[in-house]
Length: 488
Ligand code: SF4
Image 1: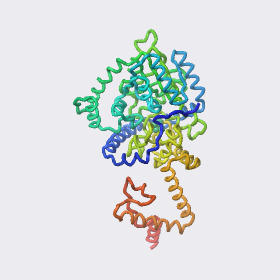
Image 2: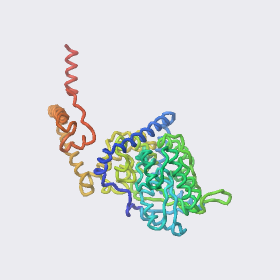
Image 3: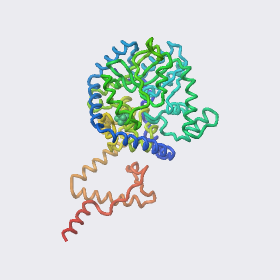
């Protein structure tokens, strides 16, 4: 399966122009600091209470490794089992194919209104625009997703789409869009959204969702949520369509035991999400509710091209919990929109270039300090820094034509820096001299009128932060001084 085709929101050539304005946006940084810290703290506390957390991570990582080694087998098993319970299964190699399948189903049923529940894959393929063009009005029903939809924005976080907006922000947005005064409190605003969305649920012809997991053994899909909107999206309209990346398949129903214990804790710091909806085929005669027709669209979009390499295949283990975003020192400062792609943060920095092609997002593998915090919190033990370094190396190997001008410049600067570093490290004398020069330059930099700012190629280092004062002595001279003190 190949992943070519018109990729809609899955590219990022603007990182270098977007992140400086994000850094200067004080309100945005306040909302990000509040949201990410709150969720990270909750996650840390909940995880600390689980004795076998590392064991769970190992088990999840092993299940995902098995899935990636036998993906074709598990997907075919899923297809057979899903068809056996009456679900229609469709395969889409490209975003264009997935859009065409979904709009085709909508047209076949004469649909004019679709209720949607949060699906990053539908953002990835630009589904809403395709639905609108085919005469179907899509209404997002997740509160955060509805907020960004009426604001004409894209989600800034894979779990909390409106994380970048404060309550006051949302109040002003509702008042402007709905043309009436709004309550001050979060509960009142939620009630406004609830009443607006209720009518959409009642009128919708089709429901569209993503899925957290597919279960090969039973042909089921599982969706997790806290608001109840997915339960309504999957049960009220007569036709339901689940759009899912092929990597979401798990072999057995019992595997959910491992992943359900990991995903809620990692994503929101909850032991379990408020709702877990497991859908196995359309409504049966004895069922009280549920759709008469269910379609599952399995999207590749270059995912299968990551399977041939053990480093890149790790990326497909992601369960989209969002923990790496919340802990990332880069994401916490600039938020999701600065990445310019539907998938932001550490997972976006590795997923976007691999799905869209390095040439479409060549800056993203460099949008990281490689601190490793993402690797430490990842419930499926994806070594994101390892994948980032792999992509950086590929970026250099593939040459300047595979990259944009900003990335080329950065690689040239880093290459020059590393050559100088290598030259200095090969001689003790040169190493000492380099240390002296660096301390003198740093001392000068914090005393020039642009306090704490470097100039020339080092300017990027201090564009968003102040240069710390250099120590009076080097580590070597301080050690020598202490040694001589001890001797005397
Ligand atoms: S990479 Fe790991 S931490 Fe990040 S969203 Fe995916 S599963 Fe969660």
